[in-house]
Image (cartoon, rainbow, N blue to C red; front, side, top):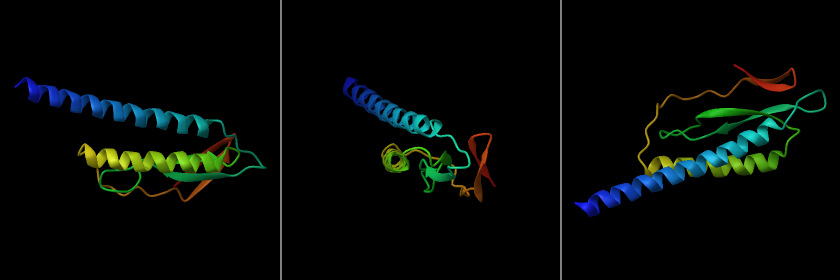
Length: 116
C-alpha cells in the first residue's frame, strides 16, 4: 500500500510543480503586457491566451504594441502549448463554451480595453 500512496503523492507533486511552472510563465506574460502604454503613436491588439481542455482559448490578452510583441507571442505560444499538454496529461476539465474574441481593442486612458 505504501507504494500506491507514494506514486500517488509523487504524481500530485509533479502536477503541482507543472502548475507552478505554468503560473510563473503566466505571471511573466502578464508583467510584460502591463509594461505597455497606449497612446496616439501606439496601437492596441489582442492575443488568445490559455487553453481550455475542450480546445480554444481561456481568455484574450489586450496589449499595447509598445511592448516587445515578438517576445509576447513567443511566450504565449509556449504557455498555450504547455497548458494544452497539462490539460491532457492531468485530465483537466473545463467548460466547453467557445469564447469569442473582442470585436476591437481601444486605447482608453492609456490602457488597451476590449470592446465586445
